[in-house]
Image 1 (cartoon, rainbow, N blue to C red):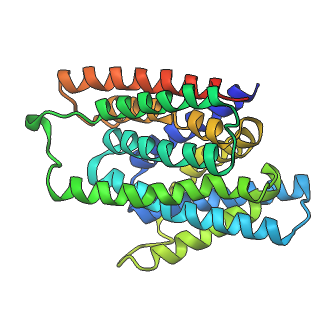
Image 2: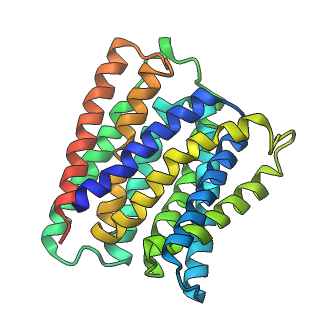
Length: 287
């Protein structure tokens, strides 16, 4: 059951990136629209569960939500710079390295030697697979140069934010339902603050409200990740969630029509296959 729950975020986040690009708007519109829906999910969860507010809950939710706002808004920015099918695999590889190691070492979720013997090679396999998905022919590269360099920098900073989003609820040992409302409010406030620095951000424009549909995908994935991390631990739960790379990459190619040559497509499919195998091996490390 834990593994099935762990696959819910992969599906939700994979579809999310495709939906937001189809709807369009500025990266701030896309992210802010998501947070509006996420707050609605949080309010619903609050009235269902009625959590007891504590200092630990508020701090954990605040730090997690603010980290997400930085990580997510920069990840969405990278979609505009280098495309979904290129940005998602890079983002996935970076997040897997940082978050899995944080869960395994700092949170001590890997307590047996055999977990490292399986987990580390699996992580290397995932990174190698992600690298294959980024191979491109010079002839088909219309986004080389400054956009690619900026996209890589943006994704590196985004990774730190997304790692904090995944880890802080576990550091404070928070319940999945309890954290939803304060976390979602922190997400919304964080995105609004960051959006205010963008000139002509159209914070409450039409595209923001349309991207509340994107928020439905995120809300389902977010709830799934919170419970998956509780059931499986961060190292396993977050790794399984990153299988969204399969959905998002193929969706970017087939639905968003992000063109790839025959050679690029071949490497992409091999890379995605290695990511899946590696994620399954990471799942085996659950004690």
